Image 1: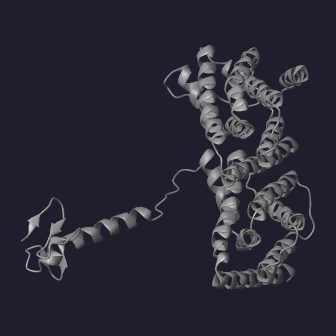
Image 2: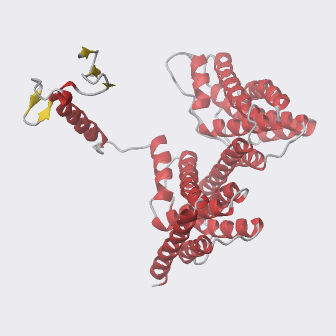
Length: 198
Length: 235
């Protein structure tokens, strides 16, 4: 777990600049944060993958991710908010998306500790990226809480649904969804590298 | 005895209750005009209105941009080329012939390996004979469907994966500049998956003897299409 935390810290420290912006709903910072996840596929896709994976790993993993992911995201956002400018890591986020998509596709049961570690890595990484963006806002706390609530809803719906699947073909549908997420991540990686190469 | 019901439900003398129009059962009704009754005319009018709504009346006074063009153009890309469509549907057909677990393993393999090929294309990595290999993929997969070939799972996945790289590479090098990368990719992958699902859905006729024959004919058609594309790529 310590290694995971160190790795996450290193990822946060080594970020290049980016151009992400928080969604402005006109309904206040809480709803801006709540909406942010749903209109940011870069964040939503790995979250969906993790929720599906946690669901495939069983109820214990689902319950753990349900609370760990928003908590890690909050912690990451607080760290990221101290940054002066918005940051992003397109290559790293693409690799994380691929990794979680593959985990879903192969449907390999991992121990609870590793599932929690996955949630911590995803939460700290994407939370800090969000934090660098949300840090420019006045009501930072409410925005972050909005994001965390959205995460809680997404994970509870998906992980809960997947946990209840019993038939073989139902799990296969989830695995196919994972393969699509991984495939999308691969293409994201290609886009990111192409942009970097100019 | 005739009982009137709300709307058009009516009991006629035979006692049957049916959602019929009054004037259909009562030719003398005042609503009958010029051989057509009012309800039919109204229905035709609504249908016409509905069809008008379906017409693509999009104007281009403003440049489309942002999210929608990424997803929509990504979704359109795999289905816009018949060579890609033939190969991807053939993957689904073959998977259906092979049965479980190939029925889902092949459609999982293809998008992932295709995305890998797309990534190589995006990165500018060159692959030789892409168009030829795409045409060959339709021929090879069509042949597999035609022969109802049943190799072991690994060999089938390898064959599908090998050709998927070339399909993905072709897409990767053709991707438009400025589109939203992630949404484009998402639309691209979902469309590919839908094509496989279409192939699998068609392939379900494999359970009937005549369906098996029809599938083999479909394999021959895919092969013929691939041969045409191969001719085009070589000349």
